[in-house]
Length: 303
Image 1 (cartoon, helix red, strand yellow):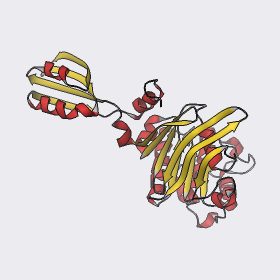
Image 2 (tube, helix red, strand yellow):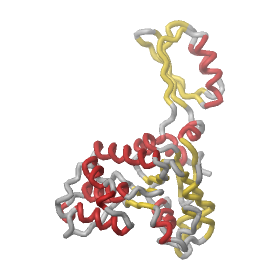
Image 3 (cartoon, rainbow, N blue to C red):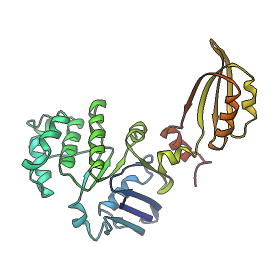
């Protein structure tokens, strides 16, 4: 896949303060990429550089191979951006706002997917936007962006204000956009949403990338949780395996219940050890995105 967004060693300074200090980020065509970090980590600054709102202080940032600051007009004709807090024209209806936003991008509302998306997001387009809740304003921005069939979507906290059902509709729409070949960059604080939707994740801290890769790749950096019920055999053998930690045992209805964590390098030995026991139940849980995120912010995980 070709990289639609390619950021290398990006620096953005405001006076002596470096909001971005050597950040790396890539998003490929057909990919949904998560962009994580707490407030102040540099997510919004990065997005503003990609949108051409800020000129970078160092490093490189390319969108479609172009400089976002020098070639903003050409880039904006191919992307759609949805912020986490949407402001609309209060005297226009929701439908009129969508039409304006589409026409600003050179898209004819009548030939777009506007009607289909309005139905999907259960939006009443006849109400004035000044009467809308935060969630409904968010729906207007999402419908206008998704109806444009852009080559790149940048979503900054896109489900802010949406109920869980509408958040699911957004996820469906984002997957469809990627399936058509668009690149999708999503900044979010909702880790479960990123874990469910995104194929790759970039975690940043203090303007620097601390972890990046596919979820499968990042999960190899952390230990899996194993829960097993043993009907017969010495479970003490598990304690001596390199990479096994936090072993806990208790008496269960079907035998001895054992739980522990295991690093990737210890999985083969654990499998062999369990093969010599009478296993009644076995559950292996890979580390969640939340665990990976917290690990990235732990002192031992910082780079």
